[in-house]
Image 1 (cartoon, rainbow, N blue to C red):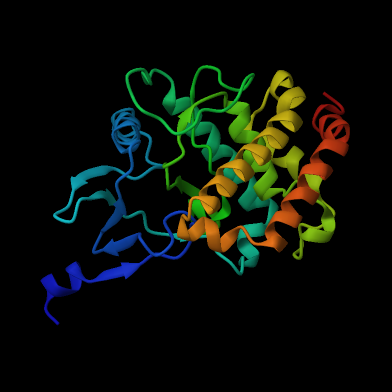
Image 2: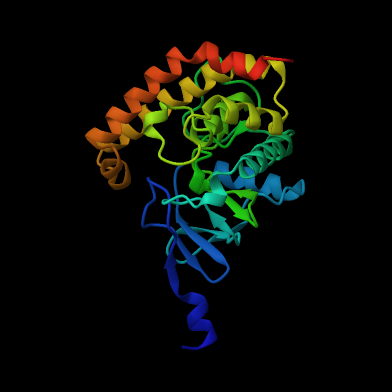
Length: 269
């Protein structure tokens, strides 16, 4: 196989739910399906590139098959089964620092005039831009350090604490310990504090984080549930009875532990 043929070979990329099996690497680029929100996301990615933020893909255009073309960011995402290095406290701290750099880089971006994904509900629909899907497989690492966010399909205007709450929910993780089967189990509140400290979350944000995490969980469950009912393949495969039961347990846990989460974040400040 010649060089040009190797560069054109399409390699499926692992991870994701909605676009599972539809995202491919071609040489040093990534090809992804277009969405109604693609122009908005491309405007955001171009802004990030212009302000010098290197933690997101760059937009290269649209290919002959009608797919968006983005730069491929070398590294590793934390895909199942999660590697040990991706679950360490140092990895979590680097996620917090990356998320803060992203939010800071979004300042000055004009979100008006674009079609976005569903916005965060009030009171988290404030100024700013959020990634909205900081799942483990949507963050690229190199040498154990989080270096980039990928998959901006759900990016939308919203409050930064909504993103931090979503990140805590997924990375701490904020859920019943019995549903965590790795070394993070039983350290939910401690790791949430680690994330908030690394991000530099202020006291107002810490007081709102528990509600943001609970709200994001409910928002995401509605999104996936609606997608499953509409026949979106990835959502339909994911939204099984076991998944729905686990999601319900997490929702109840977040509600009953809201005060404990807040106390863990504000204790000693």
